Image 1 (cartoon, rainbow, N blue to C red):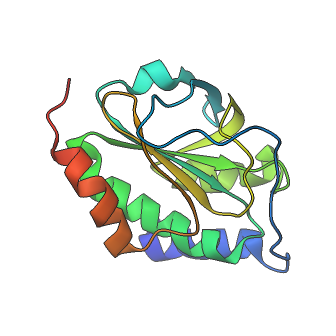
Image 2: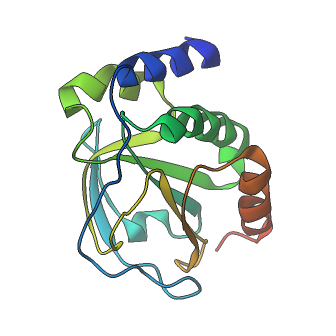
Length: 168
């Protein structure tokens, strides 16, 4: 499946739904401090935590199927990951609980190279807007935490210096 058809699949899965904010209750983690631990289960059943990404640059992308900016950002993250994964980039796409069910998202998860998460546990604060992204460096330090979709320019600005750092 081509990049364009993957983007179309995402757009179809989001059609007809309204964009609203997502909310949680935890305080936000602090940039330039150790990233909070997390535990995830991916769509392929893999169980991962922050420790599994030591030595890599990780983007935690919180998104929803009903979110217009997310529909633009997820294909961008997919393409960026494909181009930079050899440099040590990892991306976890965390669909919020108010998205489609994991069963409905399974076809999309099969088409993406980035790992989609069906269960996430961690203290990453209140997610007020979607998409929200957290970037964790090779040493486990939170380097970026912002709501709003990435652009290619912003991805390069945030990730290029971190990917240029020597792996552990």
